[in-house]
Length: 212
Image 1 (cartoon, one colour):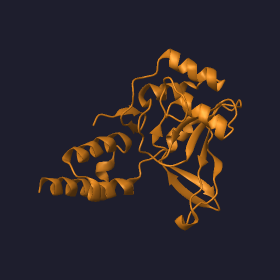
Image 2 (cartoon, helix red, strand yellow):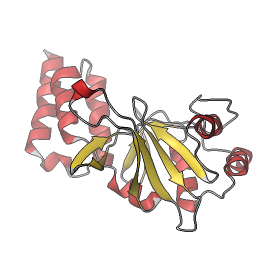
Image 3 (tube, one colour):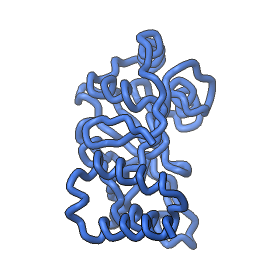
Image 4 (spheres, one colour):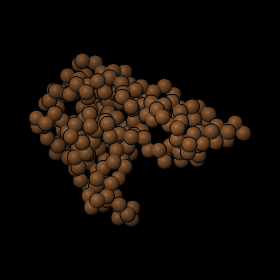
């Protein structure tokens, strides 16, 4: 697999960079200019998949690691269709978000992350965390939670879920190409990963298992 890279982030399946017209369409509907860092990020992350997590304080002293992995894309959009324009229209109607607030990614469920450009603070990042059923034993109330003071801070706090990587290599990898792709991913997101004995062992064992 070939990844596009933005800082320490390895992005899968990204679309071509946005056109000027696509950016202008977002900004017109949004009612705000996109920050330079966000525009640079879109150059390589447009509509891609970002398997990184961020730690979110969901209240009562609990920290939850959430991956807003599904990145929205530029282009013509209608409603709840993974485009910035479509998701923006949907969030305004159903969540009543104000002008200047842009949804830009979601997790595998109903949680979303927003770039808040409605004030003059440069753009904080706010997450809508969807409550879970009581039997899950975790948060049951949905809430909006500020998770970063800027988009730069948000990006800097994204990290690889090391335990999930090891679990994938041990239990889920079924082809050598998957192990090679994981190594490429680690080279970008965790450059010194080969110094981690447990990670290295998981890679070696996965390769040996798939050769057998």
